[in-house]
Length: 350
Image (cartoon, rainbow, N blue to C red; front, side, top):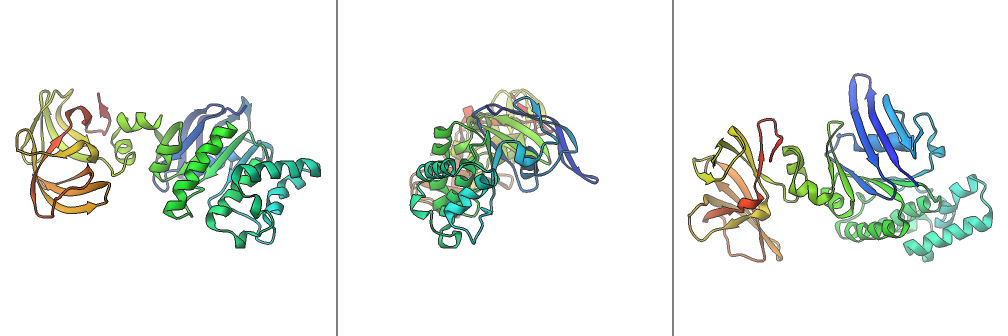
């Protein structure tokens, strides 16, 4: 069992508040992802849980046990770092065995754990090599293997794929998801890549400025972001935002064009629409006029950059291949069921 609970957790360095009143409950067996821009506090939060740094305020509990002052080695957790942190002068086998030997486990138990981890990660043929003889993906597997052999109550992974190339990241990401499914152990995963967060997580914690903006399942955050920040951070390409006026029955877009839609507000609002929910229209009925500024033909999809009336940039992602050229005048149609509205404070309007 490994349930991790944070209560009013805070971390400050002098007058700099890196984490502010973090309340979080990570249930046993969950794969939770911390995501957010650089400097939001996600790695600092992971270090607090790991015991590599002590909180300034609040509580950290593992299975109900207060661990604020418990050393990292005694928390039953295993951490996988971005830098792999392998001993270069040791073989893969020796790297895997090192922590277990220090814990004075019997040799038979050590060999059994290494064999099982090597089978699970498909690194059996690499056991006698040194880290310098391995590729980046192989080193990452060894780093994960070193965590697995400890039989931890939870895994903590700090941007473990950031040093890999794009193709290898995709395959290793799939391996991590499959590994979690086999082990069923609690995992906390830190990344700045929202695609990793969406594809791996049971739940995502979105952080900004040391505070939690929203917690939820990936599609919950995608479909119902709590505020404009989450809406812009989750989803690729990022959501389009238009500053509009609302009178309760319609939205007035930049440039004076009107969308007839019931709006639970009056005055200034922000309209959000994802690029996937904007289409090219055959005529100007209920559409927004725009001019194409750039076309990215990706084969399976076409990303079209436009400038709409009122000097408003609008991005749309079209499925398949389309003959659209820069400078072309087009009409854009919004999917009325996929509009997101935010008030002047950036909070979602339902």
